[in-house]
Image (cartoon, rainbow, N blue to C red):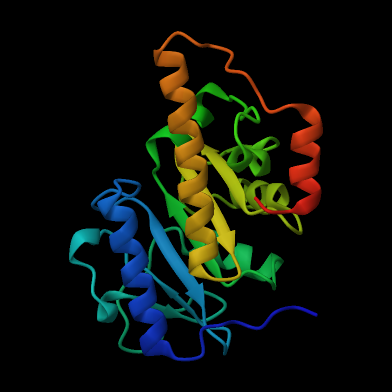
Length: 217
């Protein structure tokens, strides 16, 4: 059974989006005008951050409510240029009710290098097969199709080469947690390499397999 949206109250949903945007902005994972966040409301409409607005000044009223087809509701501003990407994810994944696109520095670096995430700690295990998709131009239909295909039926993250990171979840907290987890793993990898360890030791295969089965990461 597909989980229903947890966002039944629009006012609370607006505040939740603003809180998450401030969290990501303070962590420098989104820039003043770069990055976007959305949630799907219980009635199918989507709340998304506006285009070209300073994230540090975002308020609940700044968010734009659009139909499932992307038309802004009456009295709304201009939605993010990435709205087609968010809507495509929601259309393909009924279980997803939050989409977070960041410009996380370490994630961008990994995408540029087309690198992989070795299982150095438990938090790295979900990212061993992290897909990398070339996506630069907002609204690029072919790029959006590749992203949706890469997410598949259960994926929670896609690296956007030359662009950033896309994470999804049943709610905002789940999507944001994936963002922070990946960025922290990549930060550790970067420190290892700064210290001269280009091939850091990985978890024993038996322990990694047990952690995957337990599904605790």
